Amino acid sequence: MSDSEINTNAIPCTYINVETSEGMFSTECAVIIELINGDKISLFADKELLIEKNGQWLLKVTEVKKNSNSQIILLPVEAFETSTRWAEVAL
Amino acid sequence: MILSNTEILNCIQKGLFTIEPLDVNDPAEKPFNTSAIDLRLGDEVLVPKSNFPIQLDLRKPGIAQFLHQNSDRHKISEKTPYSLKKDNFVLISTYEKVKFPLNKNGICYCARVEGKSSIARCGVLIHFTAPTIHSGFEGPITLEILNLGPNEFLLTPKMYICQLIIEEVKGYPITTPSQFKGQTSAAGVIE
Image 1 (cartoon, chains in turn cyan, brown):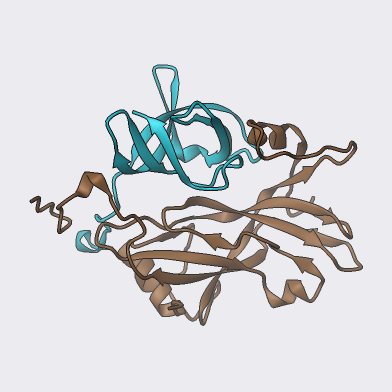
Image 2: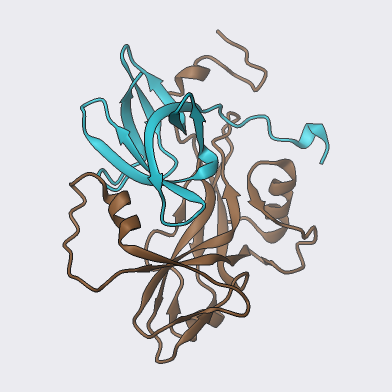
């Protein structure tokens, strides 16, 4: 594949703070995300979408819209508790 | 519009989406079909525990942790496949990982995972809900496998288990990608 053929158009993603625990498959983690309204949602995310920084786990998501104190994001998969990939979390 | 085998390979080579590992460069060879690409089974089988009655309430937090705690994980191999009994249900991921990125140029793809006729003839459902692989998804695909046939069915790693039908998405999935407001090209022309 030549350089000109490599896709450079993928939208950059952002990372949000999450809590993690062991997933069902060994390649994934169970993830808990706190929404702006204080509710907590959970999902399974591929380990490649998670990074650890200073002891804090971060999940790769797509940033859709930034508000003054929150952001609308698109999760990698839908959360169990809300049945949607859209979520609003604190900045 | 559904992508043909040649178009699937063309898009993969352009990096518009990925299906890995994929060692074949000929759309006339396995795993390609004329309008789909076959995917293989991974090597972990998740068996839900069913030894006590539980009422699932998705309104309550912590469902992911609950599902993890209430399933058993089995590693399978060519010599030790998993025998799926009649009316039993398991979860298995595909061996391949896919990635359907949200592309700034507006051309996005999504997919649907479907069963294969040979396995359907045996009475085995490869998925019975949630076939859609949305734009923006990346990772292995989790299959919900249910044996409705009269016989036990052996699940072996890397067996061709499902097919992926890929389509171009008309219209951009995200209406207000704030980080690209005013940006009109990949080079980043900002208003």
